Picture (cartoon, helix red, strand yellow):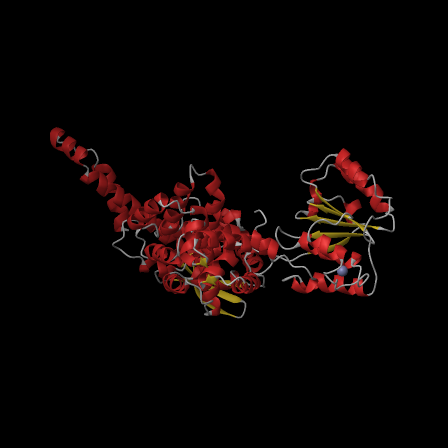
Length: 553
Ligand SMILES: [Zn+2]
């Protein structure tokens, strides 16, 4: 963003005016006050945090005529004035992005050995220094190794990773902070009050957020709003200028999301499309709301944001894990947005996935972020709470099984998750997670949890199935349970003549139910009915008999 009138006018002229960079300022002030000067400084930080501003203040500190080398330049002597005006002959300001070639650097450094014309020091301010070519860096390095006494270098960059270590090691490195939204908001309001410009609290709050750590951007946006809004900054105006969706509409969207009303959401999205809203920003907004909801779930405190009501609604409707999934779906779709045919369809897909909840490709979403892996411990109770009247209900058994599978794959990276799984309640899950051979699995599937005391777990087994119990499989099961729960576990298996509900039986039942269902379908099939009638056929009776046998068991 270009420097604007406000940004130029309010550019800090002294260290004390600089906001949000206290640690760097303190260090510089101390070294100036103690006259411990370094010959080259490196300022790093994101755009608009004050790197070049800091460099100019430093130039004044080194060249002030009235006060000598000082941390508090007078601002009135000819050096101070000309530096502020950008006309100081001994301050060489270069944008490395536009002068990357080695010839440019040589030309810049040609006169290094000559004494300064006006000031005490010649200052070379090289902005975006990471853009220099390798040859340019080498040329610069030669000077940095043995700089003349009267020369100071100030290098500035947004990307210190790209600077060769040989250069880095010769600079005093200061890392500037991204300015927090609160600090930006305060400063912005101070500026606006001084400029006698009316503003809405929600408006400055929004600008501070969008400025993303950059005071310069905040002032630029404010300036834009002023010129559009008749010398007043309103929230409505900001939304219009930046194509942002007003918070009321975002709340409305969340409302529909909570109610799983896909149809109305699609209508709203269409409407937004014609008002040219920024869908990417909107998705970011949703993600940020999910993030705040996740925090609210734990802290139970709200930030007094326009989305408080939405956060409460989301929190009432979804449990912690589901909020994690919503967040994860949002983030993953945000990445995908660039590949979507357009942002609108990318956003639509995101919302649909959020409502359908666990989509088809959960594993992919989860694998994209380890942090999200805890998300999939679905609570069984939740399964029954789904609204029955909604057209799309994905929360069924396949989802549950799938999520358990994923849990198995990612559990090791999830601290604290293991604590929820017990042999008593989640034997089926535990078995799936154990690394055991078929024989041991067969044993595990046929035993039923009975009781436990300390590390000893008692299981029961049908007396007719004793053949699956071997000392080898018991040993193997003990070993892998101990490994899984990270403590010694002993198991004891007792025979029982009661009818036990084992996993093996459950699996068989599930299988049989499927066959029965399939048979019913065949029986009711109009085509087959017609064939049966026409040919008086009875040939499928065989299969029905088989199933009836199983049914009778
Ligand atoms: Zn001065």
